Structure formats: C-alpha cells, structure tokens
Image 1 (cartoon, rainbow, N blue to C red):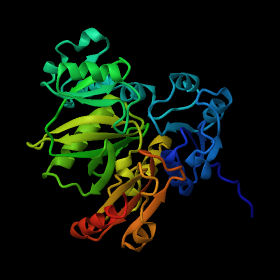
Image 2 (tube, one colour; image 1 turned 60 degrees about the vertical axis):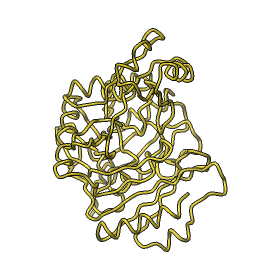
Image 3 (cartoon, rainbow, N blue to C red; image 1 turned 30 degrees about the vertical axis):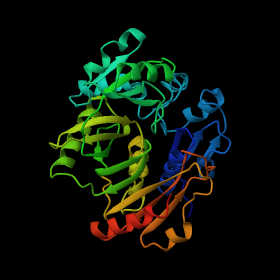
Length: 374
C-alpha cells in the first residue's frame, strides 16, 4: 500500500547566526525545513539549514525565501530593501511594522507609550541643537544611545553633564540618538510573547537577568520578584502584541522599580538571549514557540518545568581565558550550547544552561558554573 508523501512546511530566515541555528534545530522535529539567507560563509546556521550565502538584498536569495510558507528573522536590522522585495509574496513575521518600531529606539519608545506601556524618560536627539537642555529634561543624568544598530552595550554612553553629552554625541558620529534618563531599578527581567496569525497568544517565562560590561551574563528562572510581577508583565506584553498587530514573537526587557512597577527598556522582535534557558528547563523552547507562531501551528505557554539558568560564554580580552569544559561537564544539570564561531573579545560564542530540582540547588549550581566561565 502506498500513500502520498506529506509536504514539509518551509520556513525562511533572514540571518544565519546562532539564533537562526537554534531556530532551525527547533524546527526540524516539527517536520519544518529551513532556509537561511546570510552573507557570512561560516554562518552557524549552515550546519542545520539550507544556507544561501548571499547579501540580504540578493534577488535570487530573496526569491528562495519568497517560495517558503513564511519568513522570520533572527535580528532586527534587516535592510528595508529586503523587506520591500518580500512584501506581498510571502508572510514575514514579525512584519515590517514591528521591525520599523523595534529597530529604531525613538520610534520604539513612542510606540510603547502609545500602547500604554511605561518607559524611561527620553529625549530624541536629531541635531546638535537638540542637545541644549536635553540632560535636564531627563533628570540630569542619562544614557545616550544611537537610535539604530546599537546592541550589547555598543553605541551607548553614560553622561552626567552637558559637556559629557556633547562629547558622547560627537563620539558616536553625531547620528540620531535617544537620551534616556537613568531609572533606579531593583532588577532586570524579560518576558516573550508570541501571537499567531489567527490571534492565539502565548507567553514565555519571566526571567531575571544580570549584565556584565553591557552584555547579558546570566539569566535565571524563576525570577526573584514580588508577587504579581509576572502577571503584570504578561498584561503589558499582550498590550504591545495587540497594539502592534504582532504575528510571530517578540521579547520585552523590563526594569523592576523599587515599588514593583515595570518599565519597558527595549523590545526585540525575535527570540532573545535571556530565553535560551527554555531549551533545557523542560517543555517547549522559545525557538519552537517562534517557529510555531510564525507558521500558525498550535501554540501554548513555554514556561520551564524546572528551575533553570543560563550563563553566556563571551570572548575575553585574554585569548587563553576560556571555559573549563571538563569542569562544566562534571557539574550536575549542565548542558553546553556552542555556536561554532571564532572566539574574539566581546563576542558571544556559546552558552551553558543548568537545571536543578529546586531554586536553592539552582543557586548553588549557578555559582559553581559561573566560576568555570571567565
């Protein structure tokens, strides 16, 4: 007896880095075939997806993505020309409207406030004339951030005087920026929300984050926050998803204030470094959730079943400062994820997740793990 073979769903991804790699690995068990458009010949995703080594605006590459059932992305700074070439040919999720907001800090903050979400005080700086009085308007000290392209602490400077603001603006090339007032927060947390084309909404866990030198160092679940914080974060994430007509997945980064209120710091239109711990905490990962949301597959919350944490492996200035892999393998509950990227200072080259039966044991294992990763 013979039967007709099922047609495998196809997913295109703009970008071929480690996030695309992990999206592709999550898609494979679902029967989804993945194609990535990425100019880097050594892109991590080439190991587990069809890799098109061409510029993001390459016509043949975009034609191949347009032949997929849907297209998603692993980074927000996708050239507008690529999105224009795909418009009307294939669903791109999240879409151009979400990307236009999230890739530009001023537009993002304005759109968050329009959705009823609190942000830090900010001033948009488009020209030298905008610098006059700007620092006073955000409380006398703040962070200057380029409106586009900055991430992991890049394109940012803390300023506490008008002279420092002028020097910082000169230092980033006098490009459009946002000056944010400093927020006196207790901790940083993040939460992802996914929404399918037919309106199904699901949430990831509330995760507590610690940064080092502007780059995420650790993420921990469950977050140590007051009762009701996660429910409030979900409400805010849903408000943004609905207001922005989200199709796909976005991740919101929050400041938790001393009074328990939440302020949104940034929005990523994709899976996020802080959600990597969902790979090993039990249940669905954030990567599977994005694949499901983009392709309109059944979707549910992807909260881990066990306490878990993540430590990033970031290249250090000392090339000999590398993780103690033997020690990590010997530590209970760990699982290594390496990106097959060359190690260099400030570059994320992998992460290690650790799982434990209870929060107290997780804290012990996380401390031991951090000691093994420079």
